[in-house]
Amino acid sequence: MRARLAILTCGVPVELREIVLRDKPAEMLAISPKGTVPVLQLPNGDVIEESFEIMQWAIAQYPDRLRYPAHQTDAWVERNDTEFKPWLDRYKYADRYPDHPQSYYRDQCERWFQVLEDELSLNGGWLLDAHMSAADLALLPFIRQCAHVDKTWFDATPYPHLQSWLETFLASDLFETCMKKYPVWKAGDSCVYLND
Image 1 (cartoon, rainbow, N blue to C red):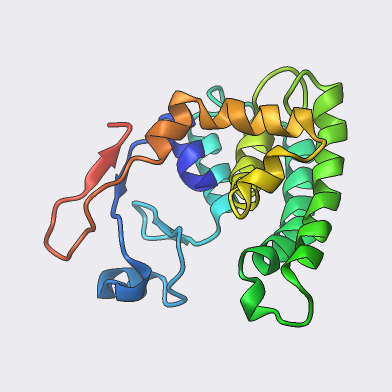
Image 2: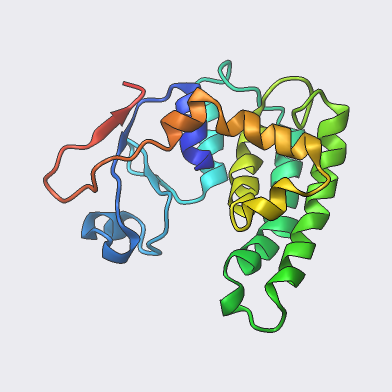
């Protein structure tokens, strides 16, 4: 999601091919044998397989369209992806991690909520200052995933700035556009052009 958010925000024209992971097209596996999404093939044939790297590529195409203070943003993404995301995966798929109950993994996620709550309360509702930046778009999809494991629980947590941050994002046109469903691509089909 964060790769698509950056592409949409920056207005980079790309060909979008919606796939089903349990039926990966041979064309996708030919350019990215690891078979995960997102994957972006550039016109010169280079392939980018990590969502944050795709974000960075999109921002580099139109650097005036999305605020990207690199040092701060990169630090937030590094912390999110190493300190929070492993716990999020365990919380979402607790049956795969039977060493602890789901509530244990949720408690670990909640430690990250407090970090974000403190930052958002200082900066006018966004991570870096009073405006949305690449840091926000890079982290929001993961908070959305976590919140939706048990939305009733999340809504009752004592993190009003975090909840408002997420709700602002979920109510945005950008989120609605990002979540638009497209027909599954099959070899020989035309593709959808984003931002064309």
